[in-house]
Image (cartoon, rainbow, N blue to C red):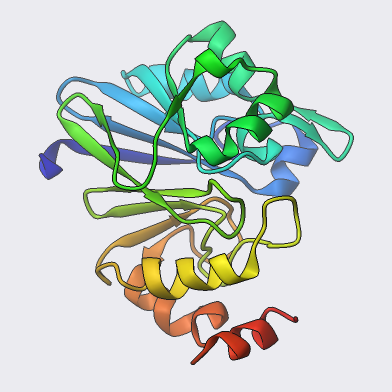
Length: 237
């Protein structure tokens, strides 16, 4: 069903949250993944301007069927962002009550950040698949940035959240961060994936919004370490 897969990358400050200075500075990407025939879709990491994101869904002629969460940080799920309030999952449920799929290891933080209840969250772990129309999205457990960080693989796309950027990787100095798990995730989990997958990161931190994984392997400094001690040096620790 790869020919039915539809993906749209939305940028904070451009496609939604156009007047929110903090959102614009954070440079978040939000993703819509859907079935081009049934016109149903999922949203990845709805935050900052939920009504604006839902307008993008409607403008494309799609119906929202669920939300996928890469990790619990407030710029991805909503909550207090260093004193600034970010919309997120709570506002999504108020406007469009759909299932929210997240890794169980991040559930407690998601609930603390957003105020959603345990019953609002659907647990998904590595290897689980979420279906929208006839399109399947595979969940990949990629801990390191947080304990429950996930990437989502669908067709030729790898939506990576803050696990892997085009020119770097996610921080490991926040609650749930683990440098050894990040090493395993990058070198044993993600580098084992086909190089022709296209990496779609959680933030617009590079000179292009996405790139083939093979290109990222060659140019991302976080993927050049020959061993774990070398990775620690690259990470500054």
